[in-house]
Length: 396
Image 1: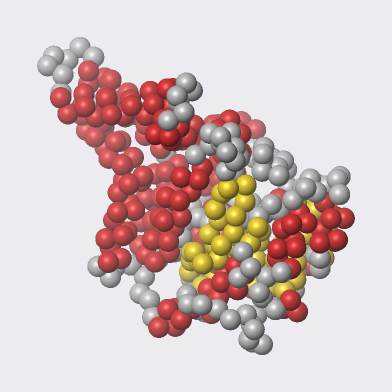
Image 2: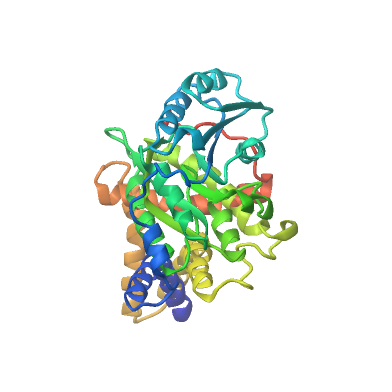
């Protein structure tokens, strides 16, 4: 029980704190991926006026987005990237509102009205009609900064790069109880470190891009955020973070709304984890360690395997800690202190219902989001992963 208690707490500490510290120190020591002058130039300022810039297709999957799509399309049309080298594709996923009409009015080059099949089905439909050498993807309610596309595409100046993700920030309403913004800042910092170390272990759906030639070689039917970076690395290329490619979108204001959103996302993530390999099995998927560069495998284990195991590690740690205290005299002081510190998280989360103090709100956010991992797994195993989706509460 003592060994189990220490092991489970140690693994939790590693995935949430230790891995980031390790990568930061390792990069200062020159470990990880070797950079060169070509890559350094690729991460500098970009001029979009050059005639040799690649053609880019931005694909937006949209369902019931009549209130948000026009602003998103207009922002993309106004990018500093040459307009004659940019194609904006809006793939409407069975929308019955005015999404398609408003996308056309806002300046989309191609608007597809597809039968309802889910986000990734809509994205695939958009890609099938895309003409760009680079495929970029945006959420329907994301606002890209004017130079974001140029900064994102600049990553591909390095021929080793197959995938690049930008930096999205979440805008919160006054009085919002959701702490996604604080979590996302930490996640973005870790993504930057992982990109320097070897490659990112996940992206985000708001702003990312892929070499078009890779599309047919990858499993793209679901979970781009998690599946694409991993598959690109397996294909022998790099998946990088591009923090100068900036975008923003509204944050779900309530913690209850965020719980529902995260639970749905984790259902999708578990589909990638458990069925993301060749033939829908584990081979070549997230859980298959074979064939990955050792530094990237360490990142996958530290940031993905252990993160998704977190709810179960917490339960084991609580069980082991309590077992050490029952019927034992004297009680082991170290384990009493560790259990007390561990119990502070759910107690702080419970207190947040009455006292809106930010440390307590952060405890509640962490508790619910960790629980959403287990809930998403349960949903996936019992009901599968639904293809369709609805806009998240308060983000339109």
